[in-house]
Length: 557
Picture 1 (tube, rainbow, N blue to C red):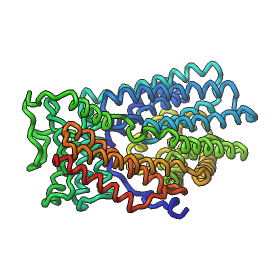
Picture 2: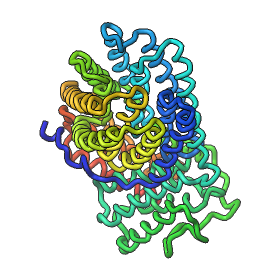
Picture 3: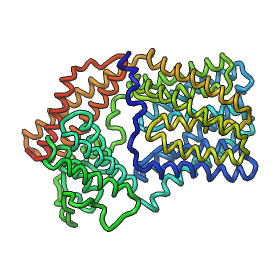
Picture 4: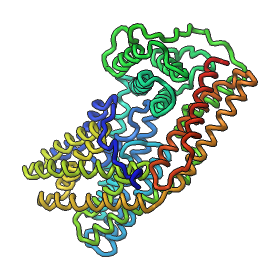
């Protein structure tokens, strides 16, 4: 329990590229539909357009084609949550208490579990499940009348449509911005690997995962099958160069100087101003492939490349076959949100759904360890956020000022939450208070008191469910990942023995993906009360074997 509940790293800050532009986009998505309504004297109804605008948090830094699809699904889901929540609230009237309030608490818990399972299965990072739950809970507890259901749903759809439009509009200005950010992240991780001296371990894992993510964003595979032809542009060459450094058994002699040049390249990629060259000085990149230089490939070579590309470009290659593994976190979410919301309702706490949302925020994690870290982050962030929220409410701002404050807090939330969740909670706490005051004005001290008690109940309930519901299937995932990595190594050795170079791309990509999944599965299981019970030496040996084979495949030995 001491190992699983360790809060170490809870306050660490992350490097995030593109955070400013993303936060501006999120704030603009909220402002565009809500400010005209506030000017028209309908600020209380602007809340539902704001709920729809939370769609913008999905699909962060994904290529624009994929982002358009993700945002479209998220927009439908967010609108459906507002519509279903409003319809349920109008039907059972939870504000009257009794059975109607109990039904809303139970339904909220089920929505939380479904949202958690869907976001985990599709590997949507961020606050996706929590925001879906938030939209449903606010709509269900907003005292809607039957005649309000369709207008509220329509307002959410408008907010979601604005968020979708802004989310894909960047394609007109910087069409390759997501690709450049993904490649920059890969270069940064490879630079860290160069400075650490290479070898296996966390730096190697993070670099491998980042490079594979860069290829996934580019829609390509590692460069072992054939030339790139028309796709041999700067970002592709940089990704190929990252891969060539990654598969080396030892860093080059000038690793420190090379790491410096890689970091210079990162700044060039993430910067919005482009000079004559996007390349750092003296970066030893592979040459451009001349047009028409790619020789025709045999059918078996094309088949091997397609199999390898499927491993890299697939949206969730690491999660295939792990559907049952995702059920336990979803079950924790259902029990935690139900327990928190039910307890708050039983105690007569106002805005009892805030307790369910706090529990969901703690349980929107990978394992018990990350749930404990979320609990620490939620606690500290809520304390600071309550002070900020009380100060803003004490000013008794007019509805128009409230909308402007909410938009500003949304910008700060999206800018800070990617760096550390505690920073996000500092701003999401007053944001929730102001949203509630905008929809139903109330006394500042009562709102702050409800938020404090609800947050405490939710944090305790979420952490308790994380401890009580033992995730034994995480150990099964780790064991399967070790078996898959061993099988990938054996397949790579067989390919090297047979000397069939057309099979090298598939073997190489399969090895890299299996090594990343092995480390992620073991880390997830290590943070549970029921450990994977894999011998650490066996895990290290499997990783070392995989990376040695990667180097041999790259060299064609």
